[in-house]
Length: 146
Image 1 (cartoon, helix red, strand yellow):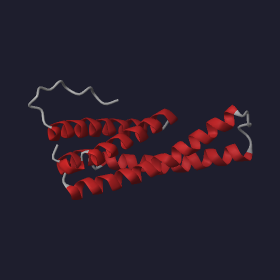
Image 2 (image 1 turned 135 degrees about the horizontal axis):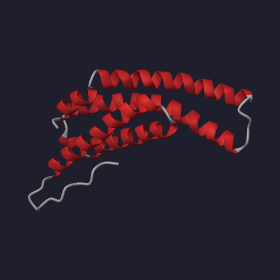
Image 3 (image 1 turned 45 degrees about the vertical axis):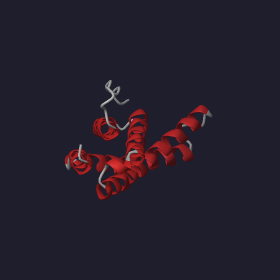
Image 4 (image 1 turned 180 degrees about the horizontal axis):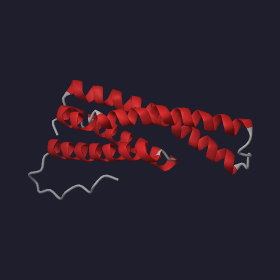
């Protein structure tokens, strides 16, 4: 979750609020990307997707307060990261559903989905490690003027 917004007086501005929200959401995304790269479990992947979605929504909602080129490129990169995380999450949901339906873990379907998840997880993890290694969250802060 993002931190609670600070109490503001009547002098507070929407651009300042937008910057504060984007900064908090970007910090959350950086934390979640690092956590997901390390843990790779279903909950971490879900939380990563939520943090991506929230940051994208913030950039869309307050678009007039961020430089256009940087904002659009960041949203594209977030979409690519979301696609990788979605591939993993889709398999997690399918595997949970099959387990609830008492489909044996040895069944060909469960084995195939598990293998697909491992491959999707490897792609997502490589992207997250590269994202963290290049410090994209810091670059994005600068591009958004935060």
